[in-house]
Image 1 (cartoon, one colour):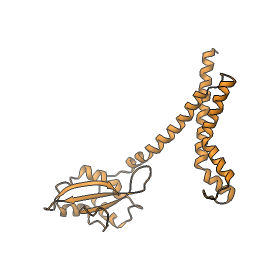
Image 2: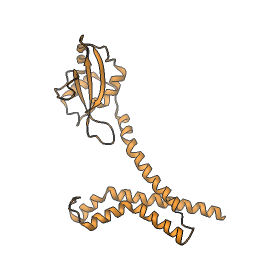
Image 3: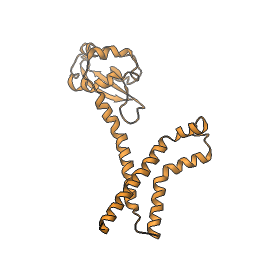
Image 4: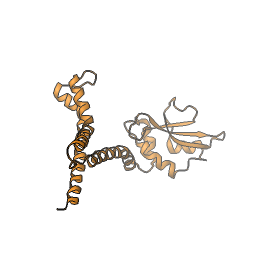
Amino acid sequence: MKIGAMFNVRRVEFFIFGLLVSLISLWAGVHWPDFGEWLFGGFNFETQPGWFYIAGRFVDWLPWIVAAVLVAVRIWATRRIKPISYIAGAVTTYLAALTFLLAAPIVDDYSQRRPFDSLVWKTSLADDPWKNPIRLRMVNDLIRRHRLIGASRSEVLDLLGQPRPTDKFSDWDLVYCLGPERGLFSIDSEWLVIRFDKNDKVIEAADVQD
């Protein structure tokens, strides 16, 4: 085997090594409270033993500790070590994890969208939208396919029903709670808000967050 080919193989090996170390670090970091449950019969971040906290931080920083060691060995001992390839593998893992976290809610949202159904929408008004966010799944189709702007109040109520009373968005005329906001962290709620003009015609309709 030629020397150049050997170096390429070694770079691939260190790249895979970086992938594996960072994957192990991420997996262990996510499951660290589970290890605490197993070791202590319960886990609390505020009362965990000092050594367990330090071990957890070591696990979090493991890929970069290994990278520092590899750089030192490369400088002081041998050129056979490929720290750049290792770091590229570690970074690739973190980028892949970040991409998954950002893309998963978007994919989930699109996969659960459904055509607007007036009867289903009105029937769901009595349900808790955080437990049954069916209106959230239909609102995009509602806004896209059903022309709300220009519709009369009676037409809107016939289509969507009377919303439950709320103190949210008091400057709007009709307010429908849709469910938890779509995204990586569902902290707030999404709402369909509608405003009428003096002739009771819709002049504005929007999907907003509180």
